[in-house]
Length: 212
Length: 95
Image (cartoon, rainbow over all chains, first blue to last red):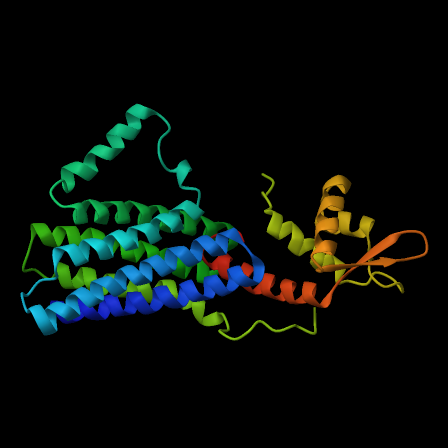
């Protein structure tokens, strides 16, 4: 059941990432906007990251049959996603997030290593969580300024992805509970929420508007 | 606090203004663009030269002064700009 949900989650992530990435790239080609270029890199990376994870789960399900995804593949998938989340956060000017003082910066870095020193994958997941929370907060602030519903969907989506990651950590502490499945379902809901605004964008060539 | 406008946003506002026809003449005056796009004359001149050289704006010679109107490719750019401005707004970002 969990394996099946993981495959669904990662395929949804692949789809949402590639669709938003493609639309952003079309926007970049039409307007040469650096924001849209960063957004396209971000969502292509997120989509490819989910795709790598999906491939890992599918390979294990049909070929290796070990009952768990290959650690190397999952680390590669998570690392690719982190690149995407970083680009989203960077678009919101990430430098305003980190404290300027070297002392506070070192304090801020400690929990990452305390929580997950053993696995590179867990460190990357911790970084993902921070970037997602940052992206969600910044997008929520934009919603408060503009009161645009679709911005709220993106903010909630990023927040749910971060929350899903957070619940996923607890499933390490309490294995064999409903937490792991919950985290996957929350992440799927987050991806769908992020993808909602895209439904308004036509995937055809931008044509000249006679009313302009 | 005044909102920071990106170069892209300023270009969008200039093209948008230059699509309007303010009187019987073709195109829009520099004064009208300055008022609508809220930009200094010096900076506007540089951007106008750039937009004309890229073919997004057309310079029309009027009686005593130059007027500017958005070219067909400028209108296409403007349509794309408006679509993707909405899209980037959805992500809380400025195009």
